[in-house]
Image 1 (tube, rainbow, N blue to C red):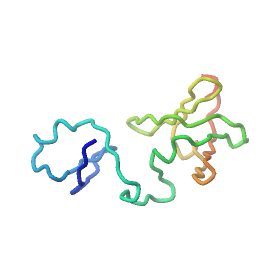
Image 2 (cartoon, rainbow, N blue to C red):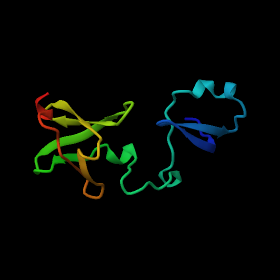
Image 3 (cartoon, rainbow, N blue to C red):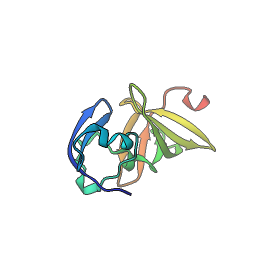
Image 4 (cartoon, one colour):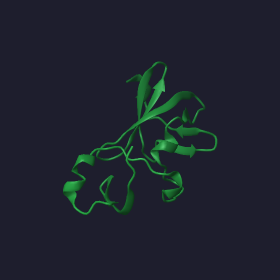
Length: 124
């Protein structure tokens, strides 16, 4: 694994454009486009209370507001509008929109996300 220092980072939609040291022109980094990037947790900025890093959400147990256990959050799909949480439920995947009126609370310490599912979502 190669290691680089981030000189600057600027948002570009849901992506981030990085300037990496020791590179000084785009042609030197084209081979890195689409690569996975890993960062030390301590180097990441602190987020507001209602925002979370995906790595913190993956593995959470998802329950409904009625206390029904749905399963584990196993993946997150990035869409053009909102993210979608993929939850393993009874041997299949349930797609839950990451919307304020659906995701009621996230308790990282307890490893739990509470949701209010739209009518009929589990029937799809």
